[in-house]
Amino acid sequence: MERQEIFQKLDEVFQDVFDDPNIHVTDETTAADIEDWDSLEHINLIVAVEKAFGVKFGMGEVTHMENVGEMADLIAKKQGQGR
Amino acid sequence: MTFVSYQFAVFLPVAAALFYGCPKRWRMGLLFLISGLFLVLSGGMESLAVYGLSALAVWAAALGVEHFRGDRDRISSIFFWTAAAALLGLLAGFQYINFPGYTVQEFFWLTGRNYEWTPVQTAAPAAISFYTLTLLGYLTEVRWGSVPAEKNPVKLILFGGFFPQMAMGPIARYELLSETLFSGRGAGWEEILGSFQRILWGLFQKLVISERLAVIVNTVYSDYETFSGWYLVLAAAAFSFQLYTDFAGAMDIALGTAGIFGVRLEENFRQPFYSRSIAEFWRRWHMTLGAWFKDFVMYPILKTECFQRLGSWGKRCFGKKQGKKIPTAAALLIVWFLLGLWHGGKWTFIIGSGLYHAVLMSAALLTEPLQKKFYSVTRLNRDNPVWAVFQRVRTFVLVSIGFVFFRSDSLKMAVDLFRGMFSGDTGLFTEAGFEALGMSAADGSVLIVSLAVLWAVSAWKETHRDGDGRPEIRGCVCAALAFGILLFGCYGRGYDPSAFIYARF
Image 1 (cartoon, rainbow over the protein chains, first blue to last red):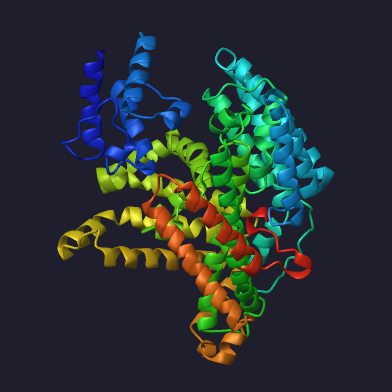
Image 2: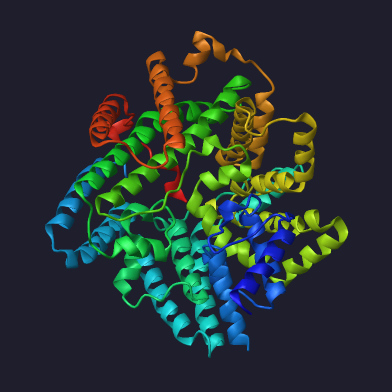
């Protein structure tokens, strides 16, 4: 999956999880940019992303993800490994 | 030896002089020796032995965890769980031996019977609750592959046992602390002065404010059956400020002390009494403990199959938005039960610093739609300053209710305290009534002024998050703080202030 496609799909997941059709994520998007993205919502988001892309994040990745760019990198890496 | 002892006032400058007097490549080894000496002086040889063996076991286990991770993951998992069980078993053996007894005592009280548990006296090694979390966090991160296993045992022992942070935190993360702890780079003059100012501010909070508030709290709580009404309300509010100035003061001393050696520790407090909700309070109070439980307990629980299924069930029954909150609320209860238990094997801790907060946070989470409706119907601006003050006062009251449990010896005592608040004589607001608090008018005045200073500093920090100000201002602040501490510090009998509250955990 191309990086652009990953971001398109991430937009859909974020819009669905945070119930806001106006959300568009970029490499630099962090929890500080999305009002409802707090520590309690983080795991709901992670699980939704895992389901949408058919990947599994390790706990270390879940706790160390700095921004959406890192999330997209991990998705691309994991999908590459899955092939 | 505590941070407020005279021994420490000698220990720190000598340690700093030795540190800067020796070549960079020896400095880490020197910090290792200094930390060992500090532990012996604080908790005796037994504490040093228990800590040293625990850290060595974790060092070896982490190497095993890393070596076998991946291809032979089962063996890696055995290494991890054996070391984790040993750490937690040791903690339980020392800290929770009386927990079953206290549980029976509380159960008897709840069912209207009388039974008092005679606690088994154990001498827990100094700082065991704190370094257990520090070492367990490191081991877990190695298991997750987030940090590489440390090859050098000296580095790992120093990581968990670095003397400013060992006794009361902040709870360190390997990735963050190792950066400055092992380099031996030291600090520049500007950084040392800032660190010194921070130590003085910590001493001011502990010796001038906390020790003075302790007089009120101890007077009322040691005879709580006699005092009633406003006395108990005042004692509850005083204890909230006492606990804050005691613990945040200790953290300022810890961060300042580490800063003198050029080591950066994580912040543990960020003006918690500015919080507008309980959830925000926990993002500002004992931050490293909250972050530890979030990363190592809350997230793994929420990611389990069982909690995922609970979420799916919740969504089916209560709709997508509300349903996904069900597993979160359930996880909050588990996490805060453990967080309360970490403070000690008593139900007063489990409720006062645990379940009570989980219930409040879950209630806030589950009633979010109602809150949104409230704002839209009333058209109230969330940032309205009067509303913000109301929310801060409300949070303070709710937090103080939890601290009444936290401070009580038993649930019965806590309930008696709450009952007493609404009954009896409230003759506090007379001269004789004030004197019954055990404090002179002069001490009362010093307390009020020093609390005003605390408020002013907190307000300044809340609006100026980037820096500490200019060096010349810093010099004046240092002089004023030193003067205040020398003149108004409470040094107790034999010039020995009481120990820090969190040092017993």
